[in-house]
Figure 1 (cartoon, chains in turn red, brown):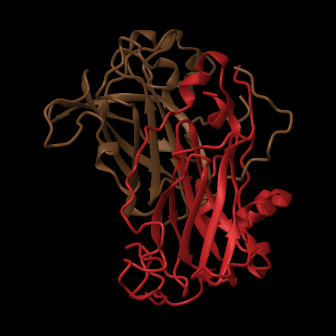
Figure 2: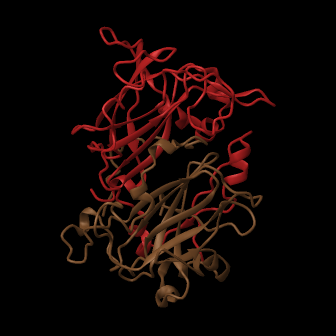
Figure 3: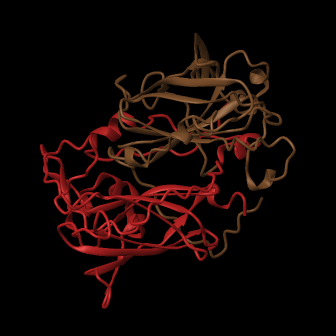
Length: 222
Length: 200
């Protein structure tokens, strides 16, 4: 008899969530099979020179439109161990809410000077830093007037740590109607970047976003 | 293995990768685990296979833009982790981690048929990231492997669910790789069983 685990919630007003969320509860994994569910991602250092600075396509070119920001943080396991040499793949929409992904047919304005995709690797203390243009919100459900709030996508992989998440922005009215934010409930607060001033750095403001990779994945090989 | 829960930091919530996971991040070496690079002699040991199929939503439509990750043992049944470093059966040309993004929702992953790890039948752990969900994970097996009837994960499932995780040869061979097919159904009728790797 299968032992049952969590039921995944369906994001309210999110059509794709309704289409793709399993309706059955997740099955528990028997002890003998647990280890086989924990991947160990080999170290990949695929970053090109300028990938940490997404505000411009290359160092010699003009910046993209909008507000240049810095995002920094530390990546750790739940027990506080820093995750070093961990790859962060980052992507966000431009100032107008448009992605340079070939499947974004929203018709929102493309920015000639912005790519919106970058990669950084954490240092020996688990710290990362990147610059980007603050992304625009965009109308995800024109029929009901629901906007995706400003957000930056981050995919974290290194060793057995594996997490895809988003950083949101403080005091954004669209946060409260976002389906994923609603599912997170009180825990959503942890996905909001914390502002800091950036005097002397060539960005308008900074956001601190510490990442804690939870669950068995991050700690399995400690 | 003990997890120290005292003073545990609260984990960052997983979130959806949305519809626009960058194709720009693609890495062909993660889509074909049999070869290091077309310009390099040598590669992983074992029988080449292609695992192929469709990822479907609850209406039977293709899950466009799905990101799939794979994790498996090598042909001798050894996973490559810090715990197996130095093991004599490690294949130096094989890590066992793969990733692809499917624009259409149809997937094709070339790899080595995994060997049976200790006490298990040959299997590949498959993780789906997609718009509309954060992450779901399952494990795929291969029809007619003798160890299937003793595998501890398969023994937890009824016959119907067991069949939903069984990849079957479809009679084709492509560039020396036998093709196995399995559709993964994210929700609804014929829903694939998914597993809770946080709690269990």
